[in-house]
Length: 223
Image 1 (cartoon, helix red, strand yellow):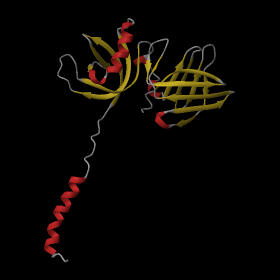
Image 2 (cartoon, one colour; image 1 turned 90 degrees about the vertical axis):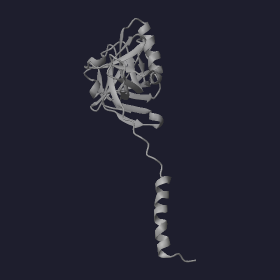
Image 3 (cartoon, rainbow, N blue to C red; image 1 turned 45 degrees about the vertical axis):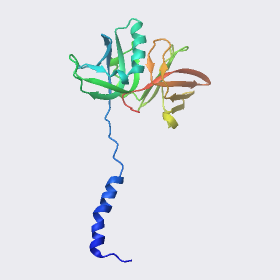
Image 4 (cartoon, rainbow, N blue to C red; image 1 turned 135 degrees about the vertical axis):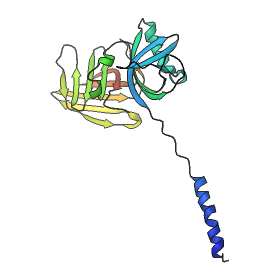
Protein backbone atom coordinates (compact mmCIF):
# COMPACT_ATOMS: atom_id res chain seq x y z
CA UNK A 1 0.00 0.00 0.00
CA UNK A 2 1.34 3.42 -0.91
CA UNK A 3 0.88 6.68 1.00
CA UNK A 4 0.75 10.02 -0.70
CA UNK A 5 3.48 12.57 0.14
CA UNK A 6 1.02 15.05 1.82
CA UNK A 7 -0.24 12.24 4.10
CA UNK A 8 3.31 11.33 5.18
CA UNK A 9 4.13 14.95 5.91
CA UNK A 10 1.00 15.24 8.06
CA UNK A 11 2.28 12.39 10.25
CA UNK A 12 5.54 14.15 11.16
CA UNK A 13 4.10 16.48 13.86
CA UNK A 14 2.36 13.51 15.48
CA UNK A 15 5.57 11.49 15.59
CA UNK A 16 7.45 14.45 17.03
CA UNK A 17 4.84 14.94 19.75
CA UNK A 18 5.12 11.24 20.69
CA UNK A 19 8.84 11.71 21.18
CA UNK A 20 8.25 14.68 23.48
CA UNK A 21 5.78 12.86 25.71
CA UNK A 22 7.79 9.64 26.04
CA UNK A 23 10.97 11.35 27.29
CA UNK A 24 11.39 11.17 31.08
CA UNK A 25 11.57 14.55 32.83
CA UNK A 26 15.01 15.43 34.19
CA UNK A 27 15.42 15.00 37.93
CA UNK A 28 15.87 18.39 39.63
CA UNK A 29 19.30 18.87 41.17
CA UNK A 30 19.07 19.96 44.80
CA UNK A 31 22.10 22.06 45.61
CA UNK A 32 23.59 21.37 49.03
CA UNK A 33 26.29 23.23 50.94
CA UNK A 34 28.71 21.90 53.52
CA UNK A 35 28.88 24.19 56.53
CA UNK A 36 30.42 24.14 60.00
CA UNK A 37 29.23 26.11 62.98
CA UNK A 38 27.71 26.33 66.43
CA UNK A 39 24.58 24.52 67.48
CA UNK A 40 22.46 25.82 70.36
CA UNK A 41 19.04 25.13 71.84
CA UNK A 42 16.44 27.85 72.29
CA UNK A 43 12.83 27.21 73.35
CA UNK A 44 13.07 23.64 72.15
CA UNK A 45 14.42 24.60 68.72
CA UNK A 46 17.89 23.82 67.42
CA UNK A 47 19.62 26.91 66.06
CA UNK A 48 22.66 26.81 63.78
CA UNK A 49 25.13 29.69 63.44
CA UNK A 50 27.88 29.17 60.82
CA UNK A 51 31.50 29.73 61.86
CA UNK A 52 32.59 33.39 61.80
CA UNK A 53 29.05 34.53 60.94
CA UNK A 54 26.20 36.28 62.69
CA UNK A 55 23.47 34.64 60.61
CA UNK A 56 21.33 32.11 62.42
CA UNK A 57 19.20 29.30 61.01
CA UNK A 58 16.70 26.94 62.54
CA UNK A 59 17.09 23.27 61.70
CA UNK A 60 14.17 21.70 59.89
CA UNK A 61 12.89 19.20 62.45
CA UNK A 62 11.66 16.43 60.16
CA UNK A 63 15.10 16.28 58.46
CA UNK A 64 17.19 16.45 61.63
CA UNK A 65 15.75 13.73 63.88
CA UNK A 66 19.02 11.86 64.39
CA UNK A 67 21.00 15.09 64.84
CA UNK A 68 18.43 16.29 67.38
CA UNK A 69 18.81 13.06 69.34
CA UNK A 70 22.62 13.25 69.34
CA UNK A 71 22.57 16.93 70.29
CA UNK A 72 20.09 16.32 73.12
CA UNK A 73 22.44 13.74 74.64
CA UNK A 74 25.33 16.22 74.64
CA UNK A 75 23.16 19.11 75.90
CA UNK A 76 21.97 16.88 78.75
CA UNK A 77 25.60 16.47 79.79
CA UNK A 78 25.65 20.18 80.63
CA UNK A 79 26.96 21.69 77.37
CA UNK A 80 25.22 24.83 76.10
CA UNK A 81 26.74 24.96 72.61
CA UNK A 82 28.01 22.27 70.26
CA UNK A 83 30.14 22.19 67.13
CA UNK A 84 28.51 20.67 64.07
CA UNK A 85 29.80 19.90 60.58
CA UNK A 86 27.06 19.08 58.07
CA UNK A 87 25.95 19.32 54.47
CA UNK A 88 22.46 20.39 53.47
CA UNK A 89 20.20 22.97 51.89
CA UNK A 90 19.59 26.55 52.95
CA UNK A 91 15.96 27.64 52.66
CA UNK A 92 13.87 30.67 53.50
CA UNK A 93 11.83 30.76 56.70
CA UNK A 94 9.36 33.40 57.85
CA UNK A 95 10.07 32.95 61.57
CA UNK A 96 11.26 36.15 63.24
CA UNK A 97 14.77 36.30 64.64
CA UNK A 98 16.30 33.86 62.16
CA UNK A 99 17.79 34.19 58.69
CA UNK A 100 16.20 31.04 57.29
CA UNK A 101 16.32 27.32 57.88
CA UNK A 102 18.88 24.60 57.22
CA UNK A 103 17.81 21.17 55.99
CA UNK A 104 20.56 18.66 56.86
CA UNK A 105 21.34 16.01 54.28
CA UNK A 106 24.53 14.62 55.82
CA UNK A 107 25.95 15.17 59.32
CA UNK A 108 29.70 14.59 59.44
CA UNK A 109 30.31 15.40 63.09
CA UNK A 110 28.71 16.85 66.22
CA UNK A 111 30.80 17.40 69.34
CA UNK A 112 31.00 19.38 72.55
CA UNK A 113 34.81 19.34 72.93
CA UNK A 114 37.69 20.13 70.61
CA UNK A 115 38.79 23.02 68.41
CA UNK A 116 35.62 23.27 66.32
CA UNK A 117 35.52 26.54 64.38
CA UNK A 118 39.08 27.37 65.51
CA UNK A 119 40.62 24.29 63.87
CA UNK A 120 43.11 25.88 61.46
CA UNK A 121 43.96 22.52 59.86
CA UNK A 122 40.38 21.53 58.99
CA UNK A 123 40.40 22.98 55.46
CA UNK A 124 43.56 21.02 54.57
CA UNK A 125 42.45 17.75 56.14
CA UNK A 126 41.20 14.89 53.97
CA UNK A 127 40.42 12.49 56.81
CA UNK A 128 40.87 12.30 60.54
CA UNK A 129 40.51 9.15 62.62
CA UNK A 130 41.06 8.50 66.32
CA UNK A 131 40.44 6.03 69.10
CA UNK A 132 41.16 5.21 72.73
CA UNK A 133 42.61 2.52 75.00
CA UNK A 134 45.29 3.07 73.86
CA UNK A 135 44.88 6.56 72.42
CA UNK A 136 45.75 7.11 68.76
CA UNK A 137 45.08 9.75 66.15
CA UNK A 138 45.64 9.86 62.40
CA UNK A 139 45.44 13.01 60.25
CA UNK A 140 45.49 12.59 56.47
CA UNK A 141 46.20 15.35 53.95
CA UNK A 142 47.55 15.62 50.42
CA UNK A 143 51.05 15.78 51.92
CA UNK A 144 50.77 12.41 53.68
CA UNK A 145 49.57 10.68 56.82
CA UNK A 146 50.57 11.63 60.37
CA UNK A 147 50.25 9.07 63.17
CA UNK A 148 50.05 10.44 66.70
CA UNK A 149 50.33 8.36 69.88
CA UNK A 150 50.89 9.51 73.49
CA UNK A 151 54.52 9.47 74.58
CA UNK A 152 55.80 9.13 71.01
CA UNK A 153 56.91 11.60 68.36
CA UNK A 154 54.41 12.17 65.54
CA UNK A 155 55.24 10.01 62.54
CA UNK A 156 54.76 11.30 59.00
CA UNK A 157 54.18 8.40 56.60
CA UNK A 158 53.44 8.07 52.87
CA UNK A 159 50.30 6.08 52.12
CA UNK A 160 48.28 4.39 49.44
CA UNK A 161 44.50 4.77 49.30
CA UNK A 162 42.06 2.19 47.96
CA UNK A 163 38.42 3.06 47.47
CA UNK A 164 36.11 0.14 48.17
CA UNK A 165 32.38 -0.50 47.58
CA UNK A 166 29.76 1.24 49.76
CA UNK A 167 32.01 4.25 50.35
CA UNK A 168 34.64 2.33 52.35
CA UNK A 169 38.30 3.31 52.28
CA UNK A 170 41.59 1.59 53.03
CA UNK A 171 44.76 3.56 53.69
CA UNK A 172 47.97 1.55 53.98
CA UNK A 173 51.60 2.39 54.66
CA UNK A 174 54.85 0.51 55.10
CA UNK A 175 57.57 2.96 56.08
CA UNK A 176 59.92 3.73 58.97
CA UNK A 177 59.47 0.23 60.34
CA UNK A 178 55.69 0.60 60.57
CA UNK A 179 53.04 -1.58 58.97
CA UNK A 180 49.79 0.40 59.03
CA UNK A 181 46.32 -0.29 57.64
CA UNK A 182 43.41 2.06 58.30
CA UNK A 183 39.96 0.78 57.32
CA UNK A 184 37.10 3.30 57.23
CA UNK A 185 33.40 2.55 56.73
CA UNK A 186 30.25 4.66 56.47
CA UNK A 187 28.79 3.88 59.86
CA UNK A 188 27.65 6.23 62.62
CA UNK A 189 30.23 6.14 65.42
CA UNK A 190 30.16 7.54 68.95
CA UNK A 191 33.38 8.41 70.77
CA UNK A 192 33.18 6.64 74.12
CA UNK A 193 35.26 9.29 75.91
CA UNK A 194 33.82 12.59 74.63
CA UNK A 195 30.42 11.53 73.33
CA UNK A 196 31.20 13.11 69.94
CA UNK A 197 29.29 11.57 67.03
CA UNK A 198 31.06 11.04 63.70
CA UNK A 199 29.78 9.63 60.43
CA UNK A 200 32.53 7.03 59.90
CA UNK A 201 33.83 4.08 61.90
CA UNK A 202 37.54 3.27 61.80
CA UNK A 203 39.75 0.28 62.44
CA UNK A 204 43.53 0.73 62.66
CA UNK A 205 45.80 -2.28 62.27
CA UNK A 206 49.25 -1.23 63.44
CA UNK A 207 52.06 -3.78 63.45
CA UNK A 208 49.57 -6.58 64.13
CA UNK A 209 47.62 -4.67 66.81
CA UNK A 210 43.93 -3.92 66.09
CA UNK A 211 42.63 -0.56 67.37
CA UNK A 212 39.11 0.79 66.81
CA UNK A 213 37.71 4.29 66.70
CA UNK A 214 35.75 6.89 64.73
CA UNK A 215 36.55 9.07 61.74
CA UNK A 216 35.28 11.95 59.62
CA UNK A 217 36.07 13.58 56.29
CA UNK A 218 37.89 16.90 56.57
CA UNK A 219 37.23 20.11 54.69
CA UNK A 220 39.49 19.10 51.78
CA UNK A 221 37.25 16.19 50.84
CA UNK A 222 33.51 15.81 50.40
CA UNK A 223 31.77 12.47 49.93
